[in-house]
Length: 305
Image 1 (tube, helix red, strand yellow):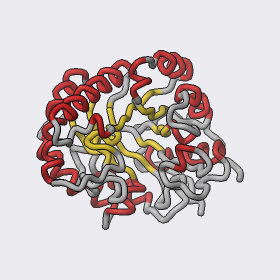
Image 2: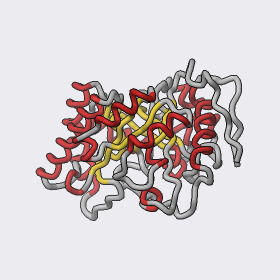
Image 3: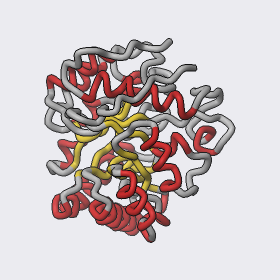
């Protein structure tokens, strides 16, 4: 595959910065995330999305040093475990989750991230067999408390809308809007991912428009979770929808492409989603920037099929 060149001034004049989820380059969840920052920078990205696992909360100095050296921004996400489930019936478990999210917000602030995204409302791939309505209500009440810290440190909490095979909490923007109505705090926003939207939404552009005023983070991948531009998603329609709601924040490429390593296996990649890890990351950076980096770009990179 021939990679598209990166223009020398590709980061100038962009209204929406372009990032990549750092696990794209990684084999294991607990590996050193900062060790891959240079790859992201070399591929033309403005920032990296990292995960605030507990060990990162204890020591993230290397991330700061690497990001400053490479002039990369850091975006933070995290996830909850059964022991920190803010929807759990047990108050002590909810309290552990609330305090964990508050620590994550403090760390995100220290790293300069405008958001704390991810599965911030219940454990990923958690499907309890009790009252789901009560769980949603407890989760929203817990996040309302967390939102006070978010407001104080200037970092928005984003709730990622996942497909039905990864979460029961909400699977569409309409459901996420109802959840945010329960939270009732402006520091909690919606995070959308085109892969999950492709599974659940009847009209992706309309769903984006219905998130107006609440969209805090936007991730992109193809309809089959390969790199953006290689599936059947209407990227023109999505770009127009983001323009319509005046979304000017990050657009982040997220996929876990290698079925031979932990990050790919645990996200159900059973076949390779890329053939050239670096080359396709460069190509995706150019593709995403051509659609989302500037309003009404004069020229766009054609889809690769």
